[in-house]
Amino acid sequence: MIGTLAEFSACLADAQTRRADTIRSELSPALSARMNDAALTEALICGLPMAQGVQHRILRSRGRGTVLTAKLRWRDGVRMLSGTPLNAEESAALEMARSIAADFLPLNEEARFQQIYGWVCRNVRYVHTAPGQKGYERLVSAVGALLDGQANCQGFADVLYLLCGLCGIACEYRCGRGERQLHVWNAVRVNGEWQEADASKGARLPTI
Image (cartoon, rainbow, N blue to C red; front, side, top):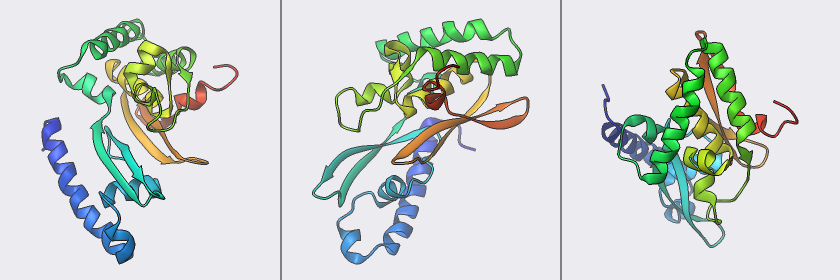
């Protein structure tokens, strides 16, 4: 049984290495030779689900996009719930999240989730910024969503995950290809049933 983030990270790295070999074998020799981190590249190109709690980050794209360098990063919401050391901003965001969650804890599970979802949609503004542009790092995390009041789809999913975790509601990340790009949202289990929850879309509706 995997009990720590370090153990999961090692397991994930092993799985990705094996998957990279499979993906690379399906690419043409010329294309394969020009790609780094084939498993991550495949996920970015094909829009396959990312590992739970892990983000893929594009660090560099060179030429016509034939060379991609990527890395893995734990989602901030996962780290903030795991008890790992946090910096000052992360600690402030976690305290804010705990204060918000405290108001919802007395409610039943369904009402608790509705309050969480409504709070996120009302208090976080959707902002789209491409990877590498100024402010992008803040938009993909629960920290930016809570302290700045704005996020992209990743940030919305992360803050919803964090608040649900603090309120005892099972929550997972979901990832797929939207109309033009990869999109991240959540699935939550309420009253024993899983349901989709996309707060980034909810925030853009005229009313909540």
